[in-house]
Length: 90
Image 1 (cartoon, one colour):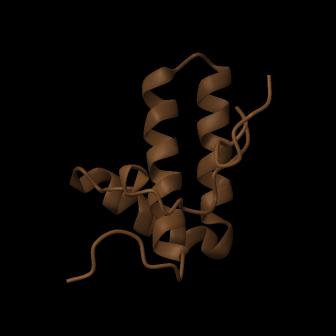
Image 2 (image 1 turned 45 degrees about the vertical axis):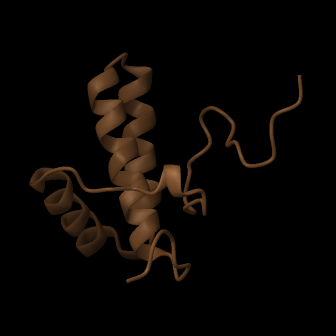
């Protein structure tokens, strides 16, 4: 069965944000915002890859909650690193 064009394969890091408004990363509370700042400060341009690696390690360990946490961090980092304007501009 072919994979749709804009759907990343399972296990592939999602480093670029999508222009689909339903997939815009949002920061829901303070800890992820703090973690994003620390990751970018520590790892620079590789922060998204580092978050993806932590997400994959959490998934491999069977920790769904931490997997979702690190994927969320990865998406926020990708959104902040992108030059693309996503969503509504006021």
